[in-house]
View 1 (tube, rainbow, N blue to C red):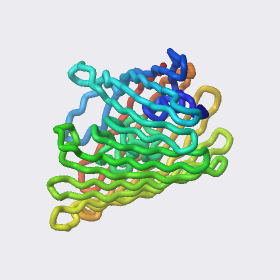
View 2 (cartoon, rainbow, N blue to C red; view 1 turned 120 degrees about the horizontal axis):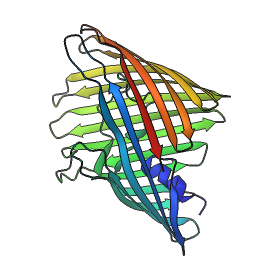
View 3 (tube, helix red, strand yellow; view 1 turned 30 degrees about the horizontal axis):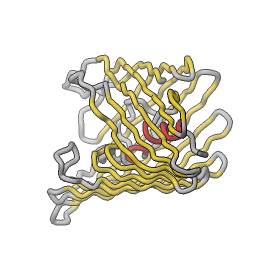
View 4 (cartoon, rainbow, N blue to C red; view 1 turned 90 degrees about the horizontal axis):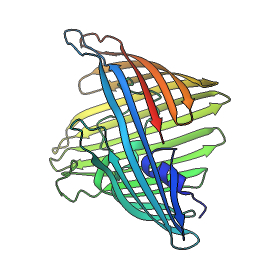
Length: 315
C-alpha cells in the first residue's frame, strides 16, 4: 500500500502522531491520542464577570485499522473516544468504516467529522473569536465522506444523511465539500457548506483560503460569506468574513499574529478580532504556548483582553 496507516490516522483523527502497534498478514492497527489543558481568561465584557479557569481543551484516544484487500485497496475503520467531557464520561467521538485506495482516495461511513471541520486558516488556540462561520455543523453520526489527495490536487465531499435517529444533529441535513491545489509553497482551496434544517432554515456558506510558506515564514488569507434563510425565504443572517495571519518559526519557537473581521448585514454590525501567540516545541510530541486576544463589536460594551497558557501532549 502506497498510503501508510499514519496517513490514515492523520485523516481520521487529525493527529500527525500515530504508533503502529500491530502489523501482520496485511492487517495494521495504530493508536494515537492527545491531552491538552489550558488556563484561560476568556473575553470579559464590561458589566460581566468571567473568571479565569482551567480548561480541558482536548483528551482523546483513537484506534485505526487498515486491512489490505488487494495491492491498491484496503478496508479501513476508526474508533475514537473523547475524554475531555464535562461529566467525566468517555464519549464515542468517531466510529466509522470504509475503503481506501492510494489511487482513488478514501471513502468512509459512520460517525465522523465533516469536511467543514477542516476549514479556516486561524493560527489561534482559543481567542480567534470572530472567524469564519463558527456555527456550522462539523461532526455527525450519519456521515458519508470521500477524500482524495494526490499531493498537488485534493478534493473532498461529505454528506450528513440525517437518519433522524435522535443524535445531536437530528433534524438537519448537511452537504459540504472542498477543492484545492498546491504549487510548491503555495496552497489555495475553496470550502463550500450547505445545511437544511427541519424547521425550514437553510444555510449556504463558502470560504476561499490561501497559504504561502517561504523559509521560516507562513502567511495566510481567507474571504468567506455565510447566509441563513428562513422557511419563507427571508434572510435571517448574512455575513462576510475576512482573516489575515502570519507566523515565524525560529529554533523551537513559533510566533503568530492574526486579524479577523466580520460584517453582518441584517444587524448592520461589524466586529474586529486580533490575536497573538507564541509556541515552544519541547519535543516533537509536546508543546507549550501562550496567547492574548482582543475583540470589538459595534454597539456592544467593551471587552477586556483575553489570555491563556496551555500545554499539549500527543502520542
